[in-house]
Length: 265
Image (cartoon, rainbow, N blue to C red; front, top):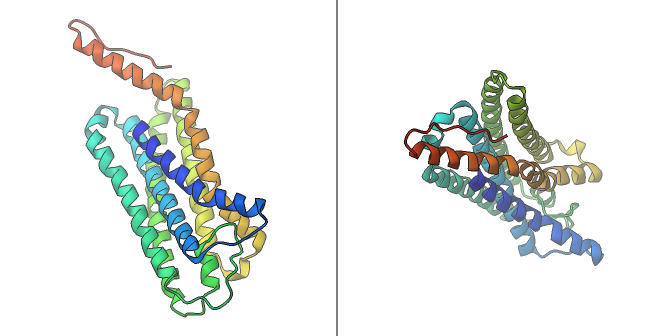
């Protein structure tokens, strides 16, 4: 879990640093200028970090499922090598998705001005400036990305259903409370991230307005990365307690004549 939290923190930090510092600079200096290459870099990085974050949230959901529903198989299913491979796959998926979308978008000619109505460069806003009919290809690529994200979300919901079924069988009310308090914030952040991001990129042009577009951009690009540290830092003490408990159990098991036992609460 700490390994995945480290990767999630890096993706959160990257996504926040991609948009917020430039927006603060523009606000303080009363300017809205950004270079063409800077805009392309911003699109690539926001897709890279947010795509990686969603993949990591999906992996962390599976990690919770194994730890709650199959605790005796945890070290077999999620060993150090398996965790490293899953994290590498998340970063590679985010990189490939960002590369395809950025290259496809900035290969289009822009002929409807150069003003992006957001606090950062975003593909739907850039497509509005294009006069090429080939922008339908980019909408198709975005639709594919959204479908893959929805597939991950269906997987997450299915996993959480299995987790909740297992949690409801826990006889201890305190145990059920701990499990729900860990899982529900995770599900809430994933739902907020996917729903607002999908609506921002696939909403019909008739529903577009500056205030709505700004609110959606903040909700999917700033709020989830800002909430993740708060949500998971509140669980750090329990995670540390569980980790130390596991270490004590291992030491006890290695001692002859002793029976392992620990209550991290």
